[in-house]
Image (cartoon, rainbow, N blue to C red; front, top):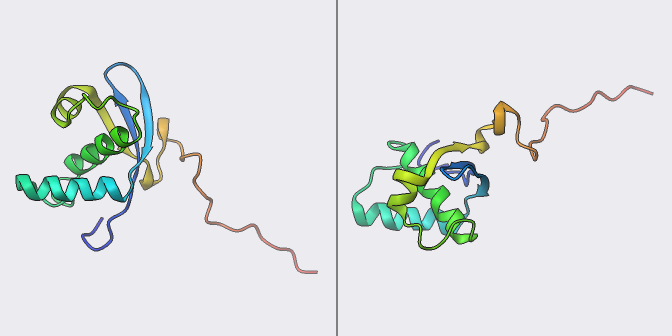
Length: 112
C-alpha cells in the first residue's frame, strides 16, 4: 500500500464474543481515520498498518450498526477485536479466496 494508492479494504473481524464479521471500509471510514489520526498525531497507514486496519474496521462496523455505538475505539481495539484481516489482499476466511474474488485468467477460446 502506498500513500497515493490507498485502497478501501474489505475486512474480516473476529470479536471476543465469538462473532466473525466481514465489512467493507468506505470513504466515510477513511475520512474518519484521517481526521482522528491528524488530531492525535498518529502515523501514516503505511507506518502503522494494523492501527489503520483496526480503525477502519471499527469505523465501518459502527457505520453499519454491526457493533453498538457505545463500543468506543479504545475498547474495540484493546479488548473486543481479537483479529482484523484485510480480505482485499486476496485471502478470505480460512485462507480461501473471498467469495467475490474474480479469477483473472480467461478461459481459452478454441479457434473455429
